[in-house]
Length: 109
Image: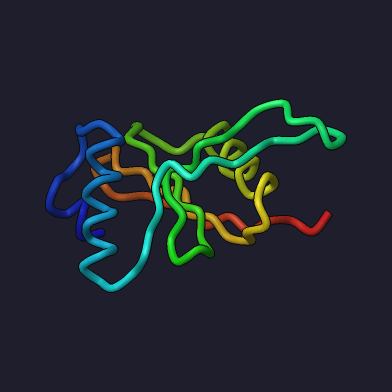
């Protein structure tokens, strides 16, 4: 919330990502950006994802700067969970007049 309060809406996602990375560091949390995840299909690598951020090696953070979070954004973030061993993701949107977010949990299936 601090990042959105200080910057407000209208910036590129990369600006919010750098600001959030700095804010997390100020609060003693570790975060990695552009974490590469391989996508496999029947043991064959078919592609890669680049995660916006992984915090404390346990939470994926997907950053958006759009007017509203859509089902496509949630599906994208869920696919990141499916491609990793992580269980929790936060989809954070800085683009609206108010900060919005969704907490997504990996389904067991």
